[in-house]
Image (cartoon, rainbow, N blue to C red):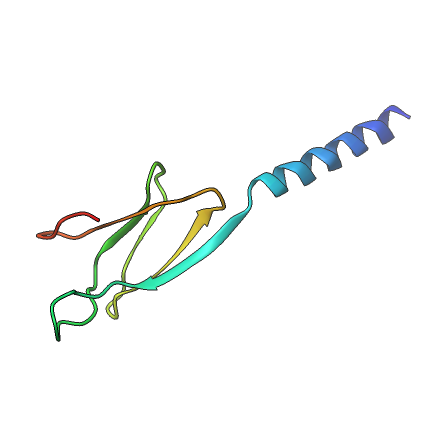
Amino acid sequence: MKKQLLLIVLFVFMGVSTLLAQTRVITGTVTSSVEGEGPIPGVSVTVVGTTLGAYTDMAGKYTLNVPANARNLSFSFIGMKTR
């Protein structure tokens, strides 16, 4: 009986922790606001308040797994203002 109860508690704990750890995938392209300059490679994209981040590829594209409660991203590049 104790083993069954322990297994039930373990499965409930695993289910709750899985639900709380939900993430979503954010994708995008970073481009210059200057006409004709196009995408910017090497931009640092981070989730504000965490250590999660990624860099844009040669086409200026990024993919980032973020927590479901994340609200803001930070974009930074050498020589430009962080947004």
